[in-house]
Amino acid sequence: MQRANHNNQPPFDAKSIEGISNVAINVSSIVQFHSVFSQQNKKYSDISLDKIHYHDYFLLKALLTDMSRKIMSRRHSGFTRQMQCKLRRHVLIARFLGLLPYVK
Image (tube, rainbow, N blue to C red; front, side):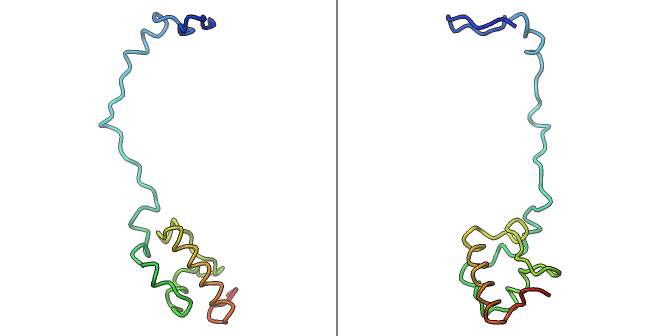
């Protein structure tokens, strides 16, 4: 491969890429990829920020995993960053008060 000149010319000549220029991509045939964690799996995305509170035992219990009692991730719950931080804080308070278990 040739080096580029100081005249701002490309390091290749137009004849070497002639065959490549005939390749075209059909953009309409590209299908948008839908993740496994799409909107249908975000069960709790309609909960407002004001609803998350350590007194709401059933909501907090629903947002913990069944076996290890970890907090459900944002991609599963559909929460925003602020909601996830508030959820974590209120789960810690509820665990400290004895409303939620640390382990099952």
